[in-house]
Amino acid sequence: MQQRRFLALILIAICFLAAVYGIQRRQADEALVFSVPSDRLELVSLEGSINGLRGNPSGAIAARDHLLEALKDDSIKGVLLLINSPGGTVGASKEVYQAAMQLREKKPLVVSMLDVAASGGYYIASAANQIYSNPGTLTGSIGVILSNFNVRSLLDRVGIEPITFKTGLYKDILSSFRPITDGEKKLLQDLLQNTYEQFVQDVVKGRTDASTKRTMTVAAIRKLADGRVFTGQQAKANGLVDELGTQEDAEQALRKLARQRFGLDGTAELPLVRARPSFGDVLDSLLTSSVRGQVLPSSLWDHLLGRLVPQFADRSVVEPPLLLMPSWYGEVP
Image (cartoon, rainbow, N blue to C red; front, side, top):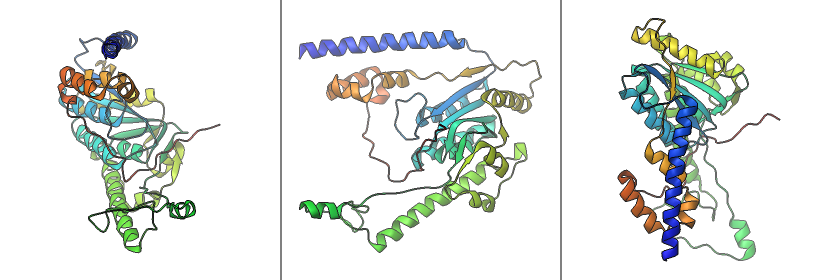
């Protein structure tokens, strides 16, 4: 027991040293200092599958928090949001979308799409004042999916009889142990359709921007919202993105919008500064789930989090999501 505690303390010390060293290196590499410029632009990254889990400095929740913080910081005159995501859960996508919509009402928001910005990734991008995409970016995939499989025949073959107790007719809906009923099919399709309608309406709202005189109708989005994937070049032609260009092009566009929005002259430098992760984000990303499970006893982990970062004391287990915006990656050979 003493040896385990000693190893845990050593691990914590290493993690803190790594965090300090990493932050110092990052500040040196990107010329980030705590005395940041009075007027600046902020760079926020959203990478990987979109979900409600914390601990990823470039994840959906971190991106949402950065957008909301930028909204409150008067020295930040605009945000460049880099998106490299195939999609993810509906709830987390809407969280970031809503934060982006709030921000763009007060400050310009420009999105730069990288390899892929599809489904939930496009959902979020649609909230920007302007969307820049590379010609080969994969985007679109507007739609919602729910899937499962039935293993009842396999269980019958090996002689396994599943037993289920439930308190409601639909509590075991999508069970893998029995065929789905007609009533359940209708219930789930209605659920998907409702979520799909929210997706379409939000994209229309996001792609209608008075400041850039851009409009998009529901009919136009419905023609594109059948799950199809587009290249950036195709998306530019059908109105899903505004311009084809690089991250640097998007940065220059954001700087121009910020000067116009706040009445700044051309001499205003407006440097682009990457959003810094919070202490909690750094700590949680360093102590991964594998480390927490294999090295630190769960009780000790909870105790340390409660002591070091109080807001992490109330940690909950997140169940697998029911509805997903298709999550996939496209690779060019």
